[in-house]
Length: 189
Length: 129
Image 1 (cartoon, rainbow over the protein chains, first blue to last red):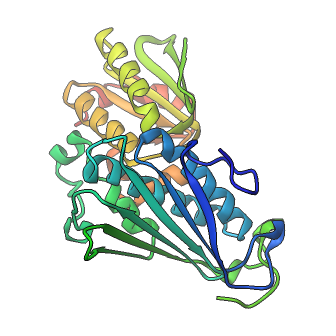
Image 2: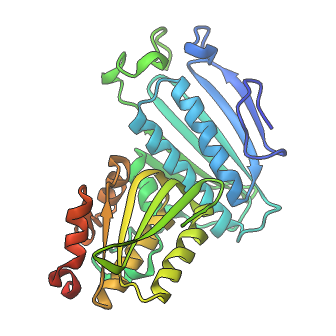
């Protein structure tokens, strides 16, 4: 399935909606500068790759640098996999919603699921100096998320949903060097 | 020999100087979908007696934490068995992930294939822990 711009979405049941357009001025490729998207997709591993591709496309159009794109991509990838594995226990019938809010200065991702809640803020980083931890080879995803993004917050909503917020503050010092897709107009945050 | 998923390909080879060194070249996205493929290839080579691996990551565009975990686990396992792993041509984006996880010091990384092979062939490698 494709969205209105022809971008591939995670699967035929996935939806991507532009829910808010904060700016009159638009970035190259006619994408809004301050825009919020909602994507809902099945909690399946094979849906995560296309989600990353969608994020990359949107981020690229908003002028994120390659490093910023890589950080957002891996944080989203690890967050989605954590939900699929730990919140839903690989139940393919469950679904994940992601809200993506991109402005000139930041990227906010909000993951929402109805699975069993684990507060990731309470989980300590892995002690990689311990050879048993390295040999086990697991538990690195959260640390990658923490280090890739500037902020991570979790909350359990009153109706029993998990919400994970991730914030990436963009380095606008390189503005104008991000190629043809860099934002050039407007001062919208 | 090559194996692939929709997102990842593995080209496996042996090294002329030592057929028990397994050379794996990964290409594409090493995400959760590619994990079974990599695990199977490693298992197959381990079953064939290989305790030394040369893993070329030059054409890997993405690696997730589970992929990093497989590598770390393999390194620990092979070091215990008197073997080793050298990672070749690691892209900067993957190096940064190794860095943020503070695991660079436990990995052997080379940019030159011959140097990587020599490292695997040295007795020092066989004895390293």
